[in-house]
Image (cartoon, rainbow, N blue to C red; front, side, top):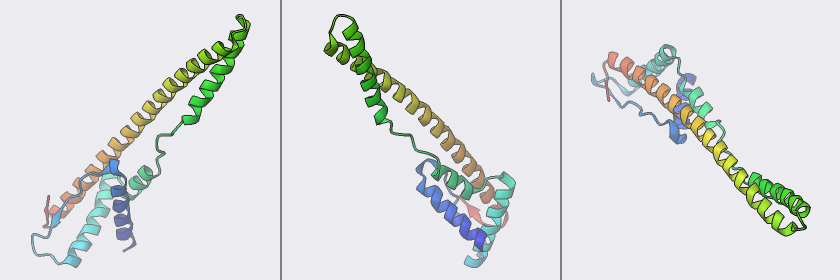
Length: 159
């Protein structure tokens, strides 16, 4: 009984993680199996599918729910601008006393460099996140196919 409730909690978590929404099979008792029999068969087929595929949908849901979201790095752009302004002020002062112009140019250059670095890091994280989501979706799809095969073998119609 505990394994069955753990499975349903895991599936609920998977539906809360939008990226890992592999289609669950729809199961119909084609031979007039009772609701209780269908629950027993479903629990046994989920156990068999997990052993056969090596996919634990609960662990998969937890891993996806706990994966870090892309970070917001707004402070780095400010630090880039401040550092650029400081550097520009020093260069401007050394180049003839144009402190203000040097600070403005340095701030602009520092902001641009920080912005490009942030975009590159965010793209890398998004690519990693997408790869993890595709892998999880593929694993869950394999798991659901195994459940469907098991239930079909027990006389259910699976779509």
